Image (cartoon, rainbow, N blue to C red):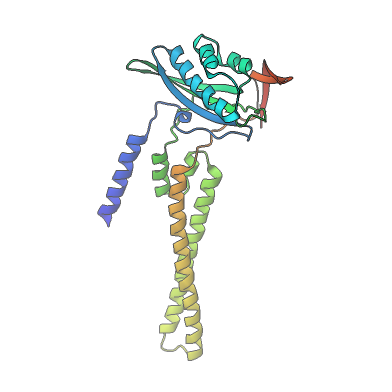
Length: 277
């Protein structure tokens, strides 16, 4: 049994070491969750002989998927040509009325040039103009790794979810596990007390029957508590591995940033103001 446990931890450690990537920002491997239901986060990557070419190729993919999502009646070749000719993403968004807001990029040198990964906020549908939220995790190199989260939650239920900034979910899992295990321990103790009463030769028949009744009740409660604790532990591992990380935003700050504003069915460049609480 001891060898099996050691082997499991060794396998988990190797898995984490292989899967973990500490060089790239967290959003490159785990797409952030949108702050409201008017937009989505999209991560695209592309290569090119230069940084600009790679960036334009990645943005072209963003615009292509956004066009398909919102049903924009625009020539794809026109958008692609605009990007490749040097027009920035803001100009392209206003020109073709396709709401895209690039918030982060990561540049990596590869063998034949460069690879650029972009994080963009894009319209969720074509009938509602998106309300962009500020994203402050562009340089967050903390790795929200699924394998690492799995190992953490294997050691302490809920810890992997907390490591992905899902504190509420992680604390709820931990408290639930504590309650269920505590219930299992308590019911085991009470069952043993009833068993001791039953085994006492001085116990009367009436007391014996009562003790037996409660013994069966506590035994059932014990099995149920430990079974539920085991099920919650497995669910905790699944959640730790699969849950999306939540990226923290700046608190109590007033920020100014470029924004695309709807003006009489068209887009116009301007400045946005965001107050985070």
